[in-house]
Length: 288
Length: 325
Image (cartoon, rainbow over all chains, first blue to last red; front, side, top):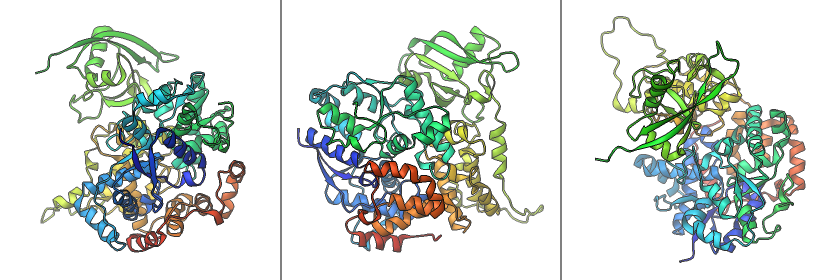
């Protein structure tokens, strides 16, 4: 098979509060022989908030990011659910509205760019599952995670709205479960796996946000999960760093280890704890 | 023509009569389900073949009255529209049927929708205008002007988005996606003069658009593809366009992204929290920030990474901005 090559849109969080996610992305890509070219020119996607303030500006900035994947002739791969949705939604709107696309391109022309709509946009988890293949992952696993019950937490923006998402049915998603099984782990089924972690309302609506985080962690704990895994750094931040607020909101200690999808895969593929940045977690993950 | 197939399905059905029962219970019914049936057929058969006291709302049976909303394995559906084939393919042959909101259940599938209607009412879901009782001519709306509604007028008030919304579940004040879609529908109507009043209603903290958690459950569940969260974004935009954005944490949180992108290309996470919360408000985040700093999860201001070709981003922010705060 030809070597897989993608333009990597890291997003902001992987460069700031979840450095372990970027490290483990590169570690896993190297193990799998996937080449990632970082889009160093990319700006923030607006994280679903900039568009509330200035929708057009958000479109222009996201279109610019896609331009740099197009100029490299590559599919853009994202490692954050919200980056994925904002970028995919921009592409969807521009590809289906010639007038809007022309308005955006008028601005981009001022900096010598043009949005064409040539690059696909996919989340890293779907690149691994659909392009690389779970069967090949299974063959490459050297340390099966067979002693662990692992709770998948999908995160909203990778499964909803389904018309823009990567193929999972949001009411019964399977991609992350399949990846857990491929890594040799036991996937835990619980009601909150496809629900919201509350991240985007954390500052404006702290009680709602803390309750949602608490319910997600509680759901996984009640089904005897040893740890949780997520493909989204924003969900990770919420679940890993906000357990104090979450515990208070649901009246019970809900602290539990939460790993990035890349870290779980990296562990199964034999990456070291340093390569995966396991020391960057607030919850203790060293036992893994 | 595809042939009709039959399979055995076990239904676990929520049964509860608030007048006689201390607690709800799930009753099991097993039946042969054909590929032609919809969820409403199953509700009918439970009543006709198993228990005549089984209660549910239904009326038009073709997706326009909005009465028969229920949840199957957590998925909100209009019972008359949802094909059993699709449901079985998605969830298998053991299915749980529940009302759209357990805590509002009155009898079996029937829920008390009072909160839904009260919130709907609060956004003035009607034309606010001085109408001449004896008009000389029609009040015309062009097709282009009608398109601005973005099909928000297709809402049938079934309540599926409202009862799938996690913000409503946690926050009794929150108006919810259906009320917001209705507010947008009338704000976008050229004959309406109530936009400012409505914006002041949907702009409140706690109840208003700022408390949306952006989960897209409403967009996913809507059987009429109204896409309520798109209308919530539009209401946010109108709040700024009409100069009605208050200087509070939620507004600064949205605006803060533009500031940060202009400066670094990327988002400065720490600065966003400080700008949104204010110098005093940010203090409540210090304990978690210290824990994060110890684990190497905080980038200090002088180490803040910047996008390559930042000049390009700065220029685009300058020439593409459409609103000011």
